[in-house]
Image 1 (cartoon, rainbow, N blue to C red):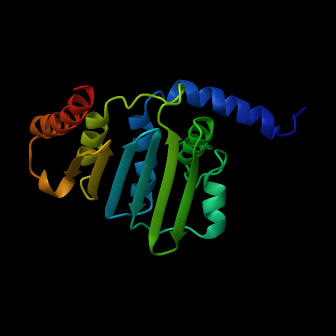
Image 2 (cartoon, rainbow, N blue to C red):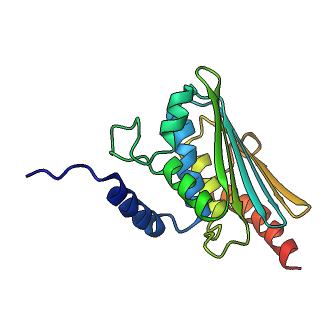
Length: 193
């Protein structure tokens, strides 16, 4: 006997799974940026703003883009174009986290032109995951996706840190990791001062 599909039960399972899988914002960011790679992007612009009680992300790529209908479906964790698994983790998780933490997700995309994703979170929400190893995530992007030009800009209460993958091309892996950690730690240290 086959049980009928129960979307509510599956959504609860997905939510419980996501709380255990994505415990850091940096891992969620990595999962989202895999979408840009799979969309054939050559350039990805990542902007993060932490101002007052607000945390916002804007991720724009020049990949193949999506139709309006695909944008709506992409936020559903049970929609994916991947053939490697039956659920799409990144956008569904992002939508769930933002809503849970008092924010929302918006996507603007046009076939052939790319996609821009905007997400907001309540920065001081008690359930907002920590950043985790953001330098490690950016290092992973640079090393595993060297064909993509990444620009990362992070504003935090009047201070900023930026990284452009084109300026670190050719660095050995340890030096690149050190460059990323130094920039991130300087931004965090200013906050604690």
